[in-house]
Structure formats: structure tokens, C-alpha cells
Amino acid sequence: VFVLTIIFLIYRFYKNYFTDEGYLMLTLPVRTSSLVFSKILVALIWTVLSLLIIAVSLFITLGHFDAIQDTFNQLKEALSGMIANNADFIKNELGVSVGGFTAEIIVWIVLYVVNIYLAFYVSIAFGQLIYKKHPIVGAVISYILLSIIAKVLSSLYVYVVSNADFIANAIDTSGQALQFTLIGTGVVYLIYSVIMFFLTTGIMKKHLKSVFKKNMNVI
Image (cartoon, rainbow, N blue to C red; front, side, top):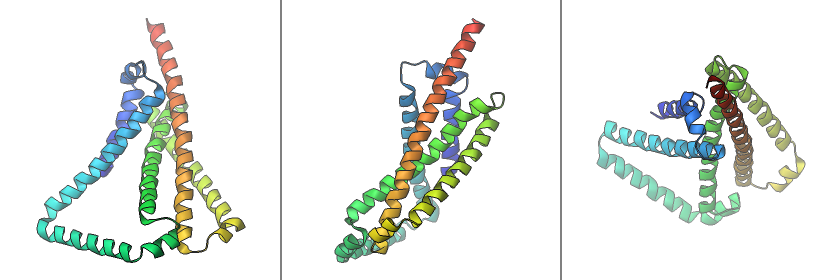
């Protein structure tokens, strides 16, 4: 269900903006950036819903709801007790409160998911430029190239960070190392997302102009 949801959302992005249907969508009195942002927001919502559906399906498939609920309650109580008894230790290790660290994880997950969708979106957009006759093939080629570039940049980032003395001197505990890794990769995802967002909207505007000229010539 989760994989099918992602595939469907990516397909709808292509169908809505890079086919004949896209001409009608892109001529609406709405900014291109707003259209892409709305797609990202919808993708996030559907991703969460698909995960909830999976969870409910597991409950239905496994049965024994009382036993499963008791297990979850026991885990919740154990986790709450562990946090309550070690709150000061966790804060000293991580440098932030448990609530703050939880918020950071949620933001990190959102940035990661947004990064995934935008990687597909910008690949679809680039596919229109490099292979107009077969845009899907162009999108696949673009995704592979972008993945290679992202891997190279990520490796470079890891190398620089792991060899930076000022970073090593600033980190005293394993918790702080985890905190630095979480924030660092989150910032990288944010930068990637911003770049891919503006690349996608820019290509969409160019695509709209070319389609508009084509339709005017037909008329």
C-alpha cells in the first residue's frame, strides 16, 4: 500500500502538469510554486494516511486486539517510565529535552519524505527537457543522474564533517554526536529540497511557455 501510494502520487504529478491535462492546470491563476507546494502537502498527508492504513490492516490481520492493545500499553508505560527516570541524563547526553529531540526527529522525517518526492518531481521535470519524445525515459535517466550527484555530495559532506577538528572538539558525548548528525543531515535535506523545488517550478514555467506557443501555432 505504501509503495503504491508513492507511485500513484508521482504519476499524478506527471499527469497533472506534464500532459495535456497539465496545460489546463498551469494556466490557472495560481503560482507554479503554490501548485508544487500543494502537491508536496498532499503527498505528505497521503503518506501518513497510508501508514495508518497499514497499521489498521495489521490489527485486522493479526486479530487478538486485546492482546495487541495490552502489548502497546506495556511498551508505552515502559517507555514513559524510562524517560521519566532518565530525563536529566537524556538532556545532558543530547543537549536538548526529550520533547525537543522528538520534535527534531519528526521534522527530520518530514524533510526526508519531502526530499524523496521532490527528487521524483524534479526528475520528471528534467525528463521533459532531455528527452521530449519519451519524457518518462528522460525522467528515469534524470533520477539516476540526480541520485549519483546526491551520493557524491553526501559522501563529500560526510568526509568534510568527519575530518573537521572543530566539530570533533565540540562533541563530548555520543548523544551530542547523534544530535549533530540529525541536525546536519536535516539541513542537507532542507538545502536539497529548496534547490529541487525551485528547479521544478522553473522547468514547469518553461514547459508552460513552450506548450502555450505550440497551442497558439495550432490555432
